Amino acid sequence: MASPITAANAYASLAKMVSQGGAPTPKAGETGGPSFGALVKDAIGSVMETGRKSDAQTVAMANGRANVMDVVTAVAETDVAVSTLVSVRDRMIQSYEEIMRMPI
Image 1: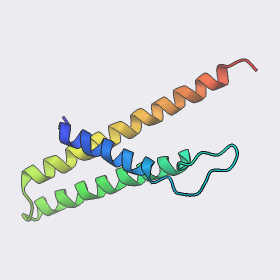
Image 2: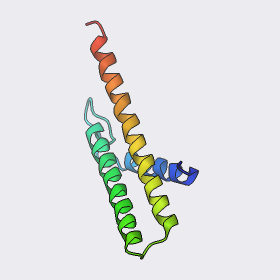
Image 3: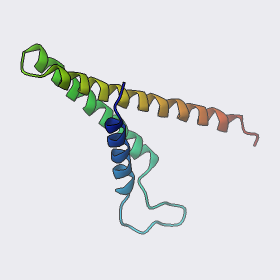
């Protein structure tokens, strides 16, 4: 199970990604923030990086260079990141299906 610190770090990371929208003045019909696609791409990259860190910790422990607690923490962080990504994916699919059911 993930710790509250891990969840807080995930929310802080998301807030940082959203706040880095950019300084240019938005044109008509545009927002000042990053595109949805860019946010999803960054989130997937973050999950992949978390997985790589977890793998590196596991290999280091197998070689006798890492603490078991560090490995457990890294695996838990990866679990939280993947669970969050799956939840977002499920919600995106639900939203798409709901939009497709709307009458025109």
